[in-house]
Length: 192
Image 1: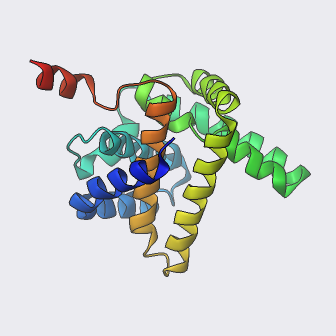
Image 2: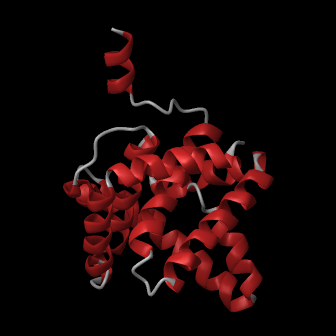
């Protein structure tokens, strides 16, 4: 897997849309104060990441995609399972929290990309990690480092690193699951 190329293309798309991503990230971070909005707003940021990985136009309203078409319930089913497993693992030992983070890494992108239910996304993310353990670990470390840099930069850096992480995660998920990096709409338009 060419992480450098994926990171570069993720950054190139993000820098062309930096204000949109920053505003959407601010909306999501503020909106997540209300616990009921955590899962759908995380879904919305992931949705924007998938659109970025596919070089599709984005808009600030995309952050609210988690509130549309049944995505609210799907995102919460996935998030509840993830939070419960993470809490149990963290209570046992902190290293287990990292393992859970790696095992669930592709879940939200799979909800968006394939329209899965929470359970189906978890099953496929486990399969993807099992088939690609090294790639999953490397991706987890890259995302962790990016977001630690964002936190160190007085949290303002997260306005850059959080969306960049989502675009990169979506790109890797698309590549590892064999999905087309282009959306069906973009593909049809370009081949017609």
